[in-house]
Structures are given as structure tokens and as C-alpha cells.
Amino acid sequence: MEPFATKVAILAQKLAEILAEKLGHKSSFFQESCLPSTCYLRLNRYPPCPIPSDIYGLMPHTDSDFLTILHQDQVGGLQLVKDGQWIAVKPNPEALVINIGDLFQAWSNDCYKSVKHCAVTHPTKERFSAAYFLCPSYETVIESCSMPSVYRKFSFREYRQKVQEDVQLHGYKVGLSRFLV
Image (cartoon, rainbow, N blue to C red):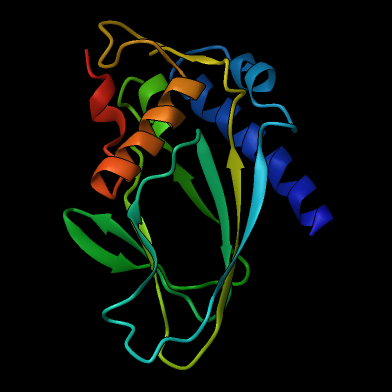
């Protein structure tokens, strides 16, 4: 797992730099804000479920980071919303799935959009995935890189606190709508 984590960490930084440069902005923000100590790799295990249509492996959500790099096994189960419809992402052992997260959406002033996704279970097969999250320190201020800004400035700490409050109060993440100007 360590070599995988090292490679995807480098890839995540490079992707963030490219996306920032495509917007005409400095890419150094991500090198300065997203340090190895603030990013993480999460391994997910989804046991078989005899009633998969009723049980999510992971509820529908958007990621609360800048971007996520995901590798899913051959069983599959990742779904995302495209044009208002849930679609399955066909597993490919030679490919990685890149998700834009909420922070990148806010930083890019909605140029890049955070994708709503979920993981569904399989009735007879166990499923595994590995996700790398490009995250800043809690003190990092997220500010739109162009004006007029869609979102007010906020720190990653404030965003995470609001997400936790929302989940406790509503059972789900309200997300960026709390930070609209």
C-alpha cells in the first residue's frame, strides 16, 4: 500500500497543478497547502449484502477535499450522478477514478464541480477500493480564485465542522450551499 500511496500522492499534486494552470492560476497553492501530513489514503471493504438494492456501501455524497483518486476492484459498485441520473462506473484494473471535491469546486468558483457518488453493495461478492484524498491543513483558507466569488472565504476546519454538524443534525452533508455569498 505504501508504494501505491506514494504514487497517487504525486499524481494528485500533479493533477491539481494542471487543473489550476488550466484556470490560469498559480499551482503552488496545492504544494503549499496539501502536505503529506494532511492527505490520506483510505481502504474500503464492502461485504456482500443479500439485499443490495436496499443497502448502500457508502451513502450518496460529494467528497470534502480538493480531489480524490480512487482505485476500485473488479466487483465494481461505484456509481455517480451524470445529467441527473445514477450511472455505474465500470471497473477497470488499469484505471483510476478522479473525483473533484467540494474544496476544488469552491476554489475554482464552480468551474470544476464536485461529483455526487455512492458505493453500492453486491449480493454475493466482497468489494474493495482504495481512495486517496488531497486535503489541506485545517487552517487553510479556501477562497475562490476568480471574481465575483460564488462562495465566501472559509477555512477547511470550518468546512469540516459544518459537515459534522450537518450530519448530526440532518443525517447528511449540506455541503457548499452553506458558504454561498
